[in-house]
Length: 517
Image (cartoon, rainbow, N blue to C red; front, side):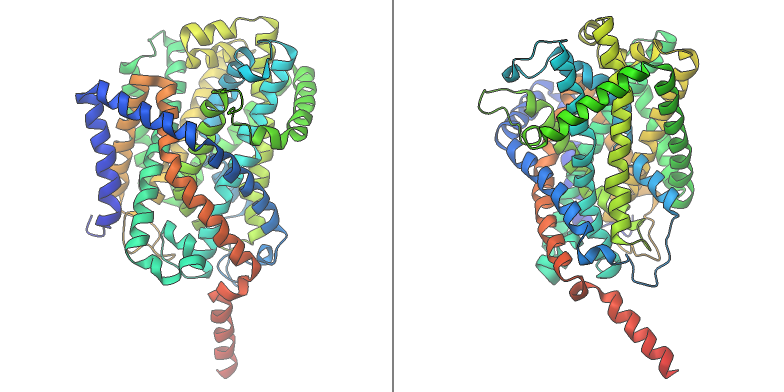
């Protein structure tokens, strides 16, 4: 704790703690404040999230083909920190993999049974099924990964090539220069810590519900606040232990295990499920997604006063922006030694492809069951989303084996994501973080881990998935402003990377020194 950045750590930490105390002591006031703030956000700022997410997709593609694409992170002589396979496994399992295990099964049924009112789609119709599946591609493929990729890439270049400090404010160095190293840099870092604390609590809330639903299915124990508290404690202890081992042990090992399990369960359900239906629905829905890409990306519901986009697309974009700012520190850190084009492939192209496959198989399976049996909508309404997940998994052959395996995947996926996030949060809260000394102290990781776990439990206990969405929306507002600013910083670098790349000068001086010697 001696290395603590007090002006970065304490403001967001105290804000989160005060919110938790208020929720216990005055639930009515807490609910009124958070609901009012959330309603304002989704009503007034939804269009910003939509435009920013779309813009990031185009910037990813543009940077890939720019001069910056050929640049190696860390300089021409930099040796990769991780192999390509390990790099991809870590990237995939520390971003939105924890979310797809829950929403990949649950979300399609929401859209199928309650499509947007303004579209006049009949619930449980073929048109609603098409809308549901194509919406899964919107929410879980290229746009969310573009939101992660841009700030992570900008940080990687700033940290390793521009020799900037380990700080999210370093991503703005091309725009603001040395002004970042004063109070404004601290303000930006504190703001990002706050947004990530809320975003991570939202993701943890989802994982708690998912795991509790599995425990309920296997043991009959009610999925209620008591069980949620036990699950939260177990998850918290595990990811703090993992975080204490450092990158090359905890995260690398867990992500490798989880990646293999992901591939296994995808292949298994594809083979034993309604294979032909999945392929046909996936093909047709992907065509619908591509054809209506701009319409779906920019759908705000304002013309018809439709709240659907605000509670789905805005929720997701806010969640991704909340996570992306600080997760950029981790994703950027592990990219050392790889080119910018490789970075975009690993952080944007391949994860998007994986997300599409996952949604086709798991989302398509739940849609098929609802369209043929019609009872998943009732389960969702009467028993909650966590029960729906295991109703679908329970209908799959060999479910007595697959469900415990699925539970293990969910558990490890969130532990891995939380481990990487705590490393980033601890790093931004501490002094002395450098490429040679990249790990923050375990105590600061533990403090953030406990705090976020408590907030996650509070929100799902009071509002369940609505609470998760409120956390994401509130945390996303400052994050999206930062994200838009980072876009312009990256564009500036992409135009003339040699102006900002200090490794070129260092390499030249090293060669001159060798010649002189």
